[in-house]
Length: 234
Image (cartoon, rainbow, N blue to C red):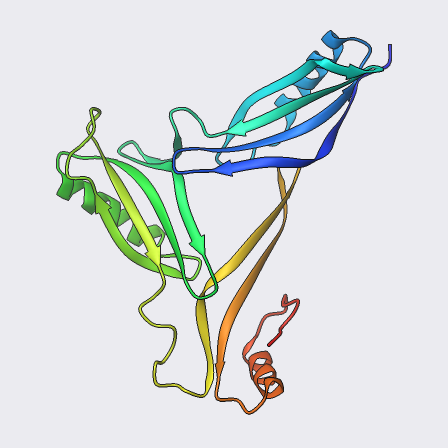
């Protein structure tokens, strides 16, 4: 009997909502029997790197869909249940369901927490102390609001929300000639088989008062001190 062979089919599905996150990938398996294919696929899934914050949810082989010893299966990584993202302390958790929105000149980032406390005031104090000691900004966004629910849930935890948003200004408001950063950078991450292999960021600026696009481009080039810049365009 030939040993089973497994390869990934191009393309995958990913979803991220308020309460959950999942990534589903498709694979092909060549094996002599359905049992051999299923066993090899489950072992393969168990050995895969798990995306950050998720866990292996399912490895399902489609035994009905096969031709000449080739089978197909899906592997799904999903939020743990209960949907706890990070245990910060016994009385403080970050939960799944981050909301991020970005466009050319604005952005926001909302994070959810659970805080165990005897009162809403104490819960807010705990959450605020943590955030201000660890996460003053999110990318180029600044803390906009820290809030907790007025009443706890049945386990004595208060729901908490931290909102990051654009700063109140985007540079000196009276500077009519010069480059002014526009908040709301775009980030991209590239993964291969669950492993992070590359990151990229795009920063957008407003260029005011220059006599030509070329002079504005020269000014922006002079202001960019980063050896990893791939392209500067106006």
